[in-house]
Length: 345
Image (cartoon, rainbow, N blue to C red):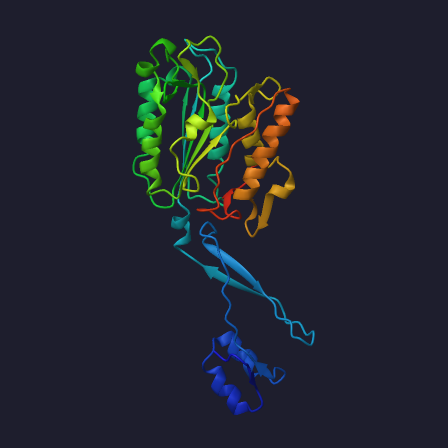
């Protein structure tokens, strides 16, 4: 490497230097109109999620204002595809509860959100594939949900991203929190509810191998008529005991002790509608970043899009709701691409 450059004056010198260089550069060195040679080494950061084929544009400008031709350097990284990992999704949504207040659109939340994540399985996507499992309504028994969770967290590979989406009722009795399956009985929540710490234990194990494990929890719903010692779960209950800044990311539909809501106009929970906006490319353009593959939704863009949409959609529905994202700066860069926006067909 010639750090200060080299003046090319004599033909012999040019020929000797040309022998050490790649053929295309050697031909330039031999041409008399080029009088100076300087080899520069630069380090260009490339995200692990970038694709197998990378193109870098290079153009040089001297202090005197001369500008070189623009050259494209193609790079190939055959290992990049495996580094990206797969997207594994389990969506659970229950509307027609048997013993709890019925919900209107929780099943549609699970269905449409799952389809939006399935659309990430594309050639120009950030994942090598997207495997989505749907568990809704009558199928969402305690036994079936446990079986689906076992399959969801089994054989996780390095680089995989897991997303668990739950839309339904969350309950609390004493210090214990439960997600309510379709036949959950509030008179026997210990025997018919799914303990939330059981869910977190499976996800904690999966996160040791996975790149990231997301939980999208819309189960802080108002549930009037419960017995006195059973209450609706809150965001604090769902996040209790989970390390902030790790790769187990719990994003709740509402913050603090406030409930989450559905919208008759949107035919979805407000939280799900905000996620669908971002994933379907319908959020404000500023949240998407232009890269070589097209537009991507970065982590910071996703947080802004979902947070602002929940506030806006809640206001339109005449309620107050605010999403709660955990702090992620310890484990992930804000500029990390997480999804490719896919327009609805």
